[in-house]
Amino acid sequence: MTIRVSASQISGHIRMHGSKSLSQRYILLSAFSGTPLVMTNRSWSEDEEVAIRIAKGCGSVVSVKDDAVTVDPNFHCPDVLDVGQSATSLRLVLGLLAAKKCRTEISMAPSLAARPHEDLLESLKDFGGNFSWTDPGKLNADLSGLSVLPYSISGSSSSQFVSSLIMMNALGSGKAEVRTSYGVASAGYIDLTIQALQAFGYTVVRQENLFRIEDMGRPDQVTVRLEGDYSSAAFLLTLGALTSENGIVIDNLPIDSRQPDAVYPAILKKAHAAVRQSERAVIIGKERVGKVTLDVDANPDLAPPISVLGMFNKEGVVLRNCKILEIKESNRLSAIGDLAQAFGTVAERIGNDLIMRPSAGKVTSFPEFSDHRMVMALVIASIISGVSLPIRNEGATIKSYGNFLDDLKRLGVSIVVEEDKEL
Image 1: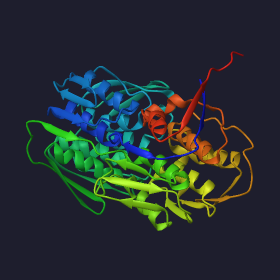
Image 2: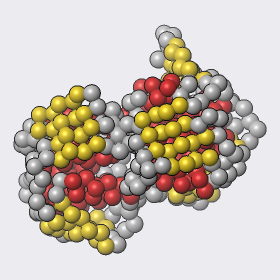
Image 3: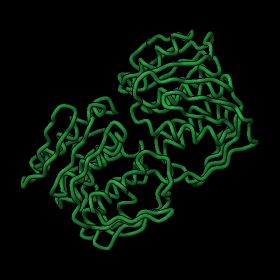
Image 4: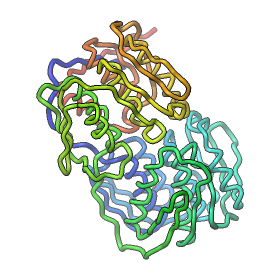
């Protein structure tokens, strides 16, 4: 299916769906810790569905009604788990399976199997874990002989590796340490792991590159209403900053959020965008936006929406430490270059930085992406440009933002569906 998007006026009020990063952590911790969970304002994402599937595979009874997810855990080691395309679920569940000393076959999309996991697997091997790939998308994990001890791991590829070992030690021993040997990529996501663990009765104290974990006792039940997903909201904030004369209000985005991408309103404000924050909402409107600089190592998921901002804000953007984008769901660094080129933007890589300078060029090609965040970036770019491009793979957005197109309609975007012609 192909869609075309357009809008003459952008404004309205959106209640942002729950953070998928937090959703996955709460569901998985409930299933593996034995503590029941009642979670509202779910994320409506494909990654959340993967976490639900894992919980069911481990014996939990999971009920989903409206925007609420209830987990009644009854853990047993699963023979087989399917993590689909979810890197977060795969990496976190490896640590949780290790805490329970399970033997499990983990099935995944071949594209996920091709992404870097070796730092985590090697760390688990050092303490008695055994792994073998039987097919491009099947990993046999034997964690039955693993010792839960103080661990050291590089987090330079992914903070999820560090989060996995923190969860493993929390549930496996109740009191342990995890040390990172190098700088941690996207380190702010570890704060979300710590936030979720605190709800389940664990305290994690961070001292530079050392994490001390202690079991403080199980609650009878964890009840949580998820805060909105800042990574998803970033696309709407970009749209509003460049197009909305009357403004967009995005609710359920707490000003004190630990989500790494909660820095985006501050980034926009520094660039003189018309952005305001209340305790629970962000208000954005059209204004001349200045040059933006982003440390991609800290906020890789902001790179696609900020790239769109740089394509149309007259002063461009600088994406520092951009190499990490090469190992995301797709090679996003290359994809951002393709997107920029299609809309007449000059994108130049200098060392580990990508510098984008808008030009007077016109749309010269119709790029096609399968990566959920790049599809969303293309949709937003098409709306801002006023050129109604043919956009395929719109269904990919459900991986992180299941209501993306519906929310755009609420803001005044027209979406026309075209049936693909048979070749």
